[in-house]
Image 1 (cartoon, one colour):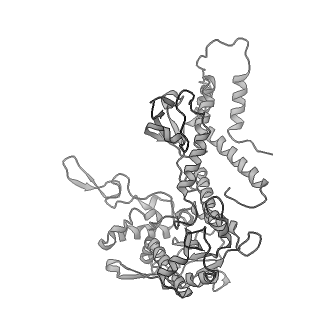
Image 2 (tube, one colour; image 1 turned 90 degrees about the vertical axis):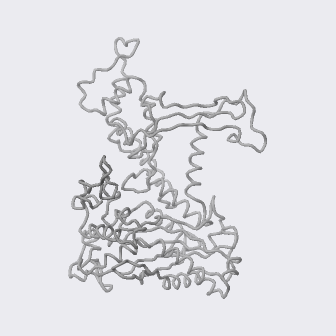
Image 3 (cartoon, one colour; image 1 turned 90 degrees about the horizontal axis):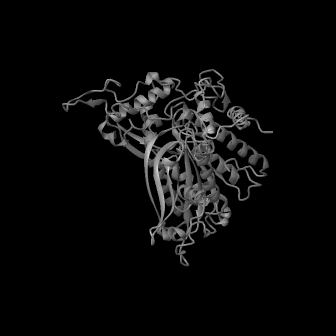
Length: 518
């Protein structure tokens, strides 16, 4: 049985009261006297109901798909026939009750927008799964290709509090910490902890991954007894990976590695290219990767992967094996929607917005002076942020390293809220499966197909081999108005989120195979 949402308990009585026939209904609608209604949101919805604009406003909110912070746009769009110039379809926000449209923010972070993050996770799940089991975007034969699940961790930068030590329960500090203990991941001795090394590792993690992929191909060629140019003609190494933060605030990577033929997923790899070869090559490549970074007065730091390198084969069939395709796809999709907030960090930049991180502001006469908001630091006061001392020190280290000339190009002040990590959270090789852009385009095409058909009776039909888009063009002009909802729209959005959650719950119960992101 479905449970009523907060909005439904309010909207239902409102609809019933206004729909109740009175003794003598006026010919024209008069403004309601809502002075006795305390809630601004309820007054707004009552006004829309009275003016017969409620359904239009609700449809506008539904288009944002339950987004918590939608983008408000105002403008117009026209679909024009290219030969005749006839306007086939037009839309203008001036004709809508609110004067603007709501567009979903498409933020991938669950902490910022759970609704958009779920769609992003669903797309990522589909992208990852198709590359493991095959489907619409990858040949089904990829399920027979050698595949492994790889985890690359960061090295140690100093002892931290944990739940185990030397494979025994308990921390080396002598305390048994609970899994939700805030002290987990923080240094035992902050004065000796290598904050500089950790920040620079995060900042160069993407470069380390790039070097790993180069080294991996070399190791595969070596294991197969082939030259690299000959290997490129015989097989291809495809991958998809995501980044995840440890509690100590350092990133590590989870990846799916797959052997393909030279043309990608449509061709099989050579018989001697086995999962064991991929396992061995991945371990050797990770061990050999090294990146030297000139950190100014901190000296030259050698960045490498940590000792904990985990490589596990992915089962060919979902019903057997230790690690199934669905489990891997769901695991990676889950981390694709997370950011540094999992390590106790915030999900927004921390540089001063008044001076844009410069630490100084300009005067009318052209002179500059230290920013009064951040006192010339360029960073907003860290003491006001709800973060741990450990995370606060990582952010300070980012700002300190940003002042070093050799590291200026890293722009660590800009990425301090990411604890120095500057890369993408999810990446893939070119022929792994499809792209997120393709999935979004298909969703837009489907939504467009749900619109009313164009009036084509009096104009020339598309020729054979042409599609409708070849004979029409879209002219549009849009401007940013703002962000978010009105008070009444907030209630409508809550109802949309409730209905979508119910639909997902019913779909999950009806599924016989666990695919958490579909």
